[in-house]
Each structure stands twice: as structure tokens, then as C-alpha cells.
Image (cartoon, rainbow, N blue to C red; front, side):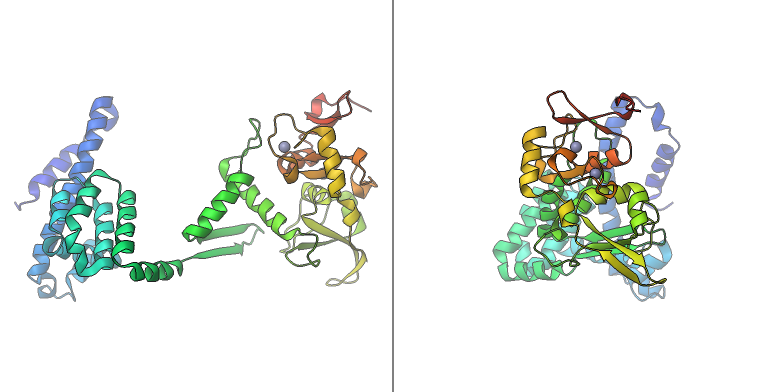
Length: 392
Ligand SMILES: [Zn+2]
Ligand SMILES: [Zn+2]
């Protein structure tokens, strides 16, 4: 039996146990002890690997390197195998305080990763501060340790820090691609400044409208991205078509809300058509189809369909400084001027025909989940459809 057989036996015993039958105190202490044990085992693994590597055992066995042997005999991905071998060597030869903290289980692999990063960045200068960083790591998270390391690098090697930050920024990316069903995949990695700016914008636009907002946080972030995009492209001083979504419809389609396509060919729902008829986010251009490809515009520029600033102020004065839905916290500047009688139906862009409502509740109105009702004092609010008086 080899020196590690005892560990395997002990793990076998634990693996056959049933933690769901343990009492809470045992679960709690178990998790703490296992975390420390995992760190200590990692330290042992590193020392065993360093000893194996020092004898060139991988090459003797016919592999290119220790990392090559490790990847091919254990199935560890090649990149990680290389990192493990380099880390084992560094812990053995260059990072004595880190090796001790790891052997005692006071730091984990995440901390070692940060410390190795610092060592690479500071080179020989790192030896002077290694014990300090390892001591700090033992009492802090790897993320906090990373912040300390960044400060050290900035202090000791400011030019390197700047260079590395610029190189690091090269990783930034956003991918947006439409899928076969007309939905869009969004994926990416944002640099700290862009991420913070987007987060700040999302904090404003993705907030729940009130206690009855049933959207998940992820759904609210999606809606917020839409609103941010609409707002940034919806400047009336910009030439038409720049940053706008152009959707072509026939007069019948405006009335029925049916058969309207988004630019990628996905059929717009009739709620989509109605919602965008009220908000300027999407400009609808009336036209007739000449042939399969070409459209003849009949009328463009529905600017008068959208409320003027003066009208919006008047609406806010009448209905309150935000969405007319009771309890909704969205302020007036983010609201849509909804036409109670739609413009397609001949409804005028008059204050009498409009209410300010947030995008979330606006959509619910057009989807028939909310109705609008006028109070005795002339102001407007929302009401569930079944409570709406039947006007026959
Ligand atoms: Zn509307
Ligand atoms: Zn609202």
C-alpha cells in the first residue's frame, strides 16, 4: 500500500455515508473541516507533483513533460495540467509562506492563483512581499486578495500595471446573434468601466415598478436593455433611419395588428404592433406592397402621433408625476403617452385621449391584462379588466 492509501480509505468511508441523516451541527462542522482538508490535500498534491516533476518521471515514462503526462494519464485538461505543474514548482522553490499557509489549510487554490498572478507581475520583487500577501490571503477572500495584489502591482510597477490593464481590456467583447426562431442570443464580457456604466443604467431601468411587478429580475434586465436601446436611438434630432428599427406595414396591418414582421422576419405580435404604435420606439411607415420585395410608402412621419413635451407635462399634472398604474414607481420621463383610442383607430394626439404609463403596464394594457378608467376627479388610473364597467 502506498503512502496515500489511508486517505483513499477515509474518503471511501465518507463517500458511503448519508449526509442527509446528519444533524445540523455535524453538517456545519463537516463543511468547515472538508474545506480545510481540501486545501491541505491540494498542498499535498502539489508537493507530490513537485517531487514527481523533479525526477523527470514524466519524460522517463515517454511523455513530453510532466504536464503532458498529467493531462494524458489523469484526463486533466492540458491547460490546467500545465498550471498545476508550474504552481507545484513555484510552491516548492519560490513561495515558502504560501506553501505553509496552504499546507495548514488556511488558504485555498483560489488564493494560490492570485498569489501566482502577483508573482508573475512583480517578478523578483515579489519575494520581498510574499509573506505579507500570504498572511493577508489567510484572513481574506481570494477576491479581496486580488485587490491587494492590484494595489501592490500599481505601487511597485505602475507602467506594468497600466500596460497589463490595456492588454486585459482586449478581452472585452459582446456577441449578439439572431437564432432561427427570431430570438436573439446576447453573450459577452465587459471591461470594468463599461460593466459599471451598464450596471448603473440597469439599476435605473430594471427596477421593479412596484409590488405587483411579476417579472423576474432577469426579465426586467431584458426589458431595461430594450428601453435603453429605444431611448438612445429615439432622438428626434437624428435623421430618420439612424439607429431606428424600421418595420413596414400596410394600412390593414396597422388596424388588425396582424402580419407585421420584425426586420429579421419574425412575426410581430399584435400587442407588439399596438405598443409601438403608442411609443416612438419603432417608427411605423405606412406602405403598400409593390411586389415581393418592394414597398411603396404611402405616408411617413407620424410625428404628430407622439405627444409633445408640453402635452406630456399636462398629462403629468393631471394624472400625477408618473405611471397612472396605482403603486407604480416609474417616473413620467420614462413613461409612454398611451392613446386610449389608438391612432390607427382615428384616436387624436390630444391630452384628453392620452395617459402617461410605464412600458411594463403599457404592454399589459395592450395585451388586455389592464384597462384604464377615469376617476370622478377626471384623472386616470388602471383597473383589472373584469372590474371595468361594461359599457356594452
Ligand atoms: Zn398604448
Ligand atoms: Zn407602471
